[in-house]
Picture 1 (cartoon, rainbow, N blue to C red):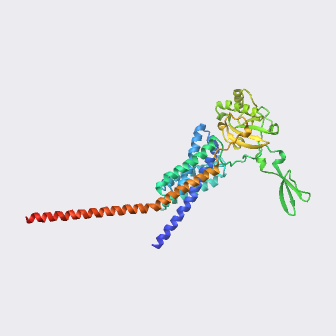
Picture 2: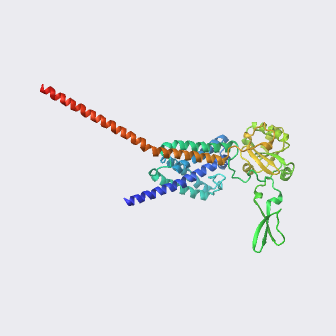
Picture 3: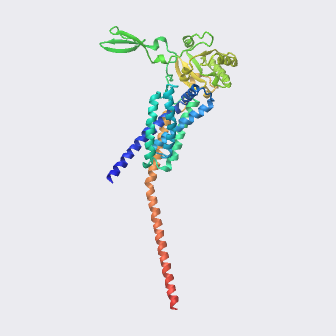
Amino acid sequence: MAEQNKKDKRIRLLVILLRILVGGTFVLSGLSKSIDIWGFIYKIEQYFSVWSIDIHRQLVVVLATALSIGEFLLGGFILFGCYRRVSVWLSAILMAGMTFFSIYLVIDNPVSDCGCFGELITVGNWPTLIKNLLLCVGIYFLIKYNRRVKGFYNTYLNWTVGVALLAYVSIVAFVGCAFQPMADFRDFKVGTLLFAQDDANVDVVYSRDGVTKRFSSDNLPDSTWTFVDVVENENSRLTLSIFGGDEEGDELTDEIASKTDKMLFVSIPDLGKVPTSAVTKVNGLKRIASSDSAQFVVVTGSGADARQRWNGLSLNEYPLYTSDDTTLKALVRGDVGLVYVTDGIIRWKMNADAFDNSQLHLSDISATTVNFTWLNVILAVVLLILKIIDTVGVALKPRFYGKSRKKDVTLHSDLETSTESAYQVQNIDSDETKEN
């Protein structure tokens, strides 16, 4: 008996640990992709491009949203022990597909990053395969033992936990798709320098008394330090290179950045992905920028033919510059993205579809929608309230159940007594009849 108790305890600890590891991994993976849903859309399109498959953007949006939300929900169910049988079997099916896909990535190497955790964590193909194999092992043991251990909530609350998780991740995905990611994992964050000066891209390395230290170009040390080297700093990764849209394609970054202290930067990575109605939208943005004395810059990553078509539709109201489409996608999310820059610093970013054309002053706009921290707090409070309700319900159940049982026993006893009395009366009547 003691040996069996020890075994049950080990199984319980194993299940709890696997729920945290497997469920936590699914939650992190699904949430990171839901936050930056556009990043996941770009990754899926990258795969289809490698396979030479042309798929409609709306289908990719639906696929990316369904996968990220589904993965998050599965992770939450496993983590809290909800739907203990169904959740692990569905995760097993998902991981079977993902594992075979990661084997393909290792063999063929079509992309260097699988996109498992979006922009949050970059994972190579070999680490991805190892991670998936470990998850498969964990899910195997969960299939075997998960039902032996109760969940964090009792089963009658499983659906309410699911509704809370679904509402949370749906809000995160919607904001990330319609506006901008609620948490920015990329280099071009709000408050960073979009157009860095040449001397801002490098640090100078000096040494003294065996100590080596890096200094910025505007904060050099005194003569007691010895010059060692010049190295690039983090700003070098943020410098956006803009080229002319003509045949020469000369770099015009410094010229554009020096024209004015205010700029409305419009990013269109792929002109072929936007509808014709976007031309009217961008033309309206130009008028808003002009009324606010802001420079209006439109940059795309498309080729000459697409740029020529756009110029014809827009009636050449503004020059169309070019840049690397990958950099533009990292700068701001969306088919048409807006970046407001003052003094070379990014002040806000948003999807052009979310921009209100009635705005008159760009500096008064705030792209903030839902605070991610507060959304997490709300989810935590809701889950805590559900746990309190669950605990109180379990504590009160024996009392009501006990009273009900006592009442049933009393009624049953009274029924037996009345039945016995009636039987005795019947016997007495029978005896009197015989005597007569």
